[in-house]
Image 1 (cartoon, rainbow, N blue to C red):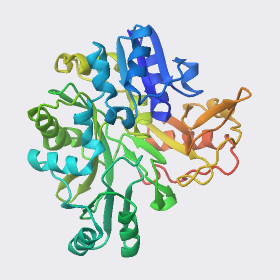
Image 2 (cartoon, rainbow, N blue to C red):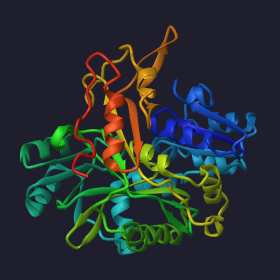
Image 3 (cartoon, one colour):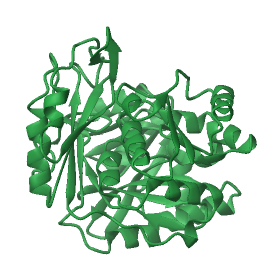
Length: 411
């Protein structure tokens, strides 16, 4: 199978790594990719949000399957264009991708499908916002209705901060605060059948102890030893399958991976948000544990045969990833700083490095974005995987970089 992966982050490096391990993948390409994906696939300079350019490249490469990593190409209709050209695509069409592109749309779908989620109000102006904040009380939860790279949400007891965040957005969703641990569940779907992957937990805040601003994610781990063993099955039954069914009823079938961000409340799981693609950095640990070849699963979603695929198999043990972020992330990250120690980190037993915000200058790796690296540790249990991840992190040196020291500590 000839595969083209769109995107350039740590998630895409994880996807490329898993696809490179699949013996059925005969040619592997990534656009635009990063220096890490270049070691496993052929990188191509390309704007992944340009449907015409993506189709032209996929056809020139004689691609069997296009795998869309980030959300922006999805909401720009790249999947629509790929399918219209007669190519297989893993990722939802533009209309179905609104499940992430508009939080108001997601709430509407959940209401119709009977999916448990936080009570909310869509607010168009400051008066609406004040009324909603009064109704729900503190802690205040204010979400930018559109895409915000995982950083459009403010959860705070500071009323003035909540109102300022709302003012900075065109339209917001204000909702009640849900109390409980947050988890992520990914599910593959061909628009009818839904197959869950391993639940994971990520860490959104920039600093230890869940302090500081929201980020795109500073680390993750799987499995969750404290979670109910039937958690994934419950999430599929009560949340993901009804959502997929409702989208199909609307004649916008959802094909790809549906990411449910959840809070485990005393009354069961409740949806915080849906994403229309693999989450980053959870993908890095979930795919590490995947034993079933990835390409066949993604192809089955694209052709509508997921229901006939044998049960997914998983490697035993655990995986933990720690994100190393550039100076000033998540504000305006500094770029161009040398990255030293990648080879030394890779020498740690059970550990490896996935690149994200990196680029080459004079043949040497430097920082090129906010979240620079995802350092993955594996082992027979979470504690061992965590120890190995941090041992590898300690061998990497980037001026001004920062990372959390408490990823998976409580697990």
